[in-house]
Figure 1 (cartoon, one colour):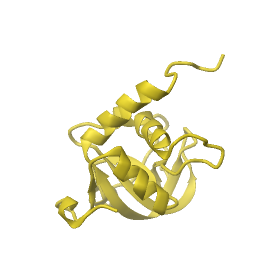
Figure 2 (cartoon, helix red, strand yellow):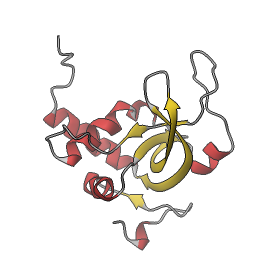
Figure 3 (cartoon, rainbow, N blue to C red):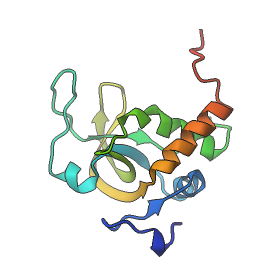
Length: 145
C-alpha cells in the first residue's frame, strides 16, 4: 500500500509505479480507473455520452482487476487497461483509481459507477510505464483476424 509521503493535495495516495498500482489491484476489488479532472470536479458535473448527448447514470470507468481467465501477471492487465484510455490524459485530466457501484454500461460497454469512493491518483509516469510495458509484452495492433 502507498505510504503517507505519497499523499497528494486532495488527500489521495499518489501511486508512482505499475507495481504500486498492481499491489492496490490485488487488495481492492473492484477497482476502476478514470481519466478526468478528479473526484471533486466529477461530483459537481453530470456525465454525458459525447456522441448522443444522452445523460449517463454514472461515471464512465475502466476495470482494473483482471478477469478470472487472465493467466498473465497483474501488471500486464494494469498496463493494458491504462493504455485503453490513456488518450484521455491531458493537462486538465489525469488518471485516478476508484471503487463504487455499477449502475449500468456506457456506449462502449464500459461500467458506469455511482456511490464513488476515490482510492488513489496516478502519476503520469505510470501511464508512460504502462505504454512501454504494453508495447513490450503485447502484440499491439493484432486484431485477431
